[in-house]
Length: 158
Image (tube, rainbow, N blue to C red):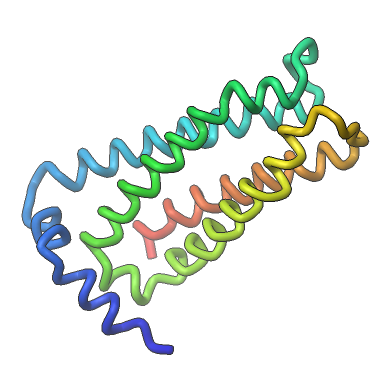
């Protein structure tokens, strides 16, 4: 399936043209995108530090995850919204970008992981998990989300 027509359409929408023609919109959107990424990674990192049993040992993982969930979800929504706007502003560049394709794959996997296994694991109060399983879940989470960030950063260079 060739996605070129879709990318061309995205590149020609009024929003993409407006962002491209503005001197200030792209940097503002990118700054908000980076703030969203920082909050997303920060909240995930805090829960993962607890999964690794390296900090906040007095709190249950489930309690910490529940407290941070609204921040995590809001930052994911903000990051996705600003990411769509950034994509629209340079859709044709993204079409042939290897890092963009890697980022989209990792983003799909990270969101899938976050809302399935990770959520079940971190929000469960009944089930006891071994330290090895906790480490595996935390490490997978960090690798996926940091992979998304690094691939996103590489888009600007390739």
